[in-house]
Amino acid sequence: MTISFKGKVAIVTGAGQGLGRCHALELARRGAKVVINDLGGSVDGTGGSSAAAMKVVEEIKAAGGEAIANGASVSDKAGAQSIVDDAVKAFGRLDILINNAGILRDKSFKKMELSDFELVNNVHLLGSAYVTKAAWPIMNDQGYGRIVMTTSSSGLYGNFGQSNYGAAKLGLIGLMNTLKLEGQKSNVHVNAIAPVAGTRMTENLGIPPEAFAQLKPELVTPAVLYLCHDDAPTGTIIEAGAGYYSKVQIVEGKGVKLSQNATLEDFAANWDKISDMSDAKPFSNGAEVTFKIFTMQ
Ligand code: NAI
Image 1: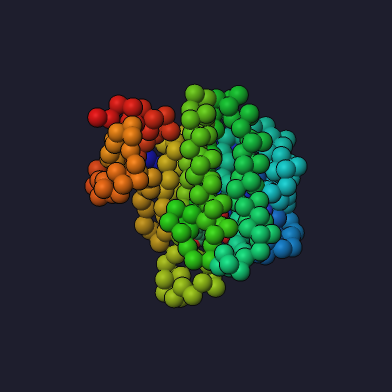
Image 2: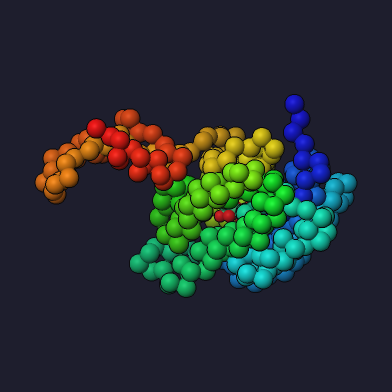
């Protein structure tokens, strides 16, 4: 069965190149009308021009698709709003938002300036929140919406030199976890992709050329489009790279219920049970954990 996006209007942020460009081209090829947002700066977030976004728009048009460019920064509140406004102005609705724009400012935490911590969080975490906030009422009011956050294994598991980026990327999972609950009754689904791809962002990380060649951004796009199609799940994280695809979940161990007078020594004596992950399970919301605490024998 072919999955179509005909009649859908999509925004892809940071779509001037790399992963965002691939997602946008494939959405357009499958019939979506796409807003190509890109600030057009360098990997560290400096500079900017709408040339990158325009180029992708031309590519889509040349292939018979429909697209417009938006050169705003997602980390600017008015800019973020303009991306959503442009979608509605040009195409009359908004169905899909792929929060993909991103930058890097890698340094060990000891050497990192707080301004680099803030900038990276402003683009990834706040930028995604700003654009999502602008799209949210439209999607909820029309009873349809698909949003994809771009997270990273750096946030899920850690990566040396990426405390700023990892914090922002896991923050997006926190945002998704609540939005999946708040969007559910209006058929607004929110998922996350953890990509691994050879792009300008990863070209200086010392990845061997053979591996880099396999890490085609085009191989991440099927997972992203699945996460924003009509039958998409909600609250799901997918890791994707070089043809590998897997669901990722946060799980909690079985744990142990100690007495109302539990002390540090009781905790220490029960460490083996507390840290045993053999019966680990995911939860679909925070209240389930509270329920478990009060019902556990
Ligand atoms: P890229 O550098 O090729 O593309 C990122 C795009 O975002 C650029 O075109 C850039 O101009 C744009 N951008 C940056 N700041 C912006 C802003 N404030 N407003 C609007 N656009 C902005 O990087 P790549 O690899 O395609 O990354 C896409 C996303 O995937 C990012 O969120 C990145 O953190 C994430 N990611 C990538 C991985 C990889 O292996 N390439 C691994 C994990 C996550």
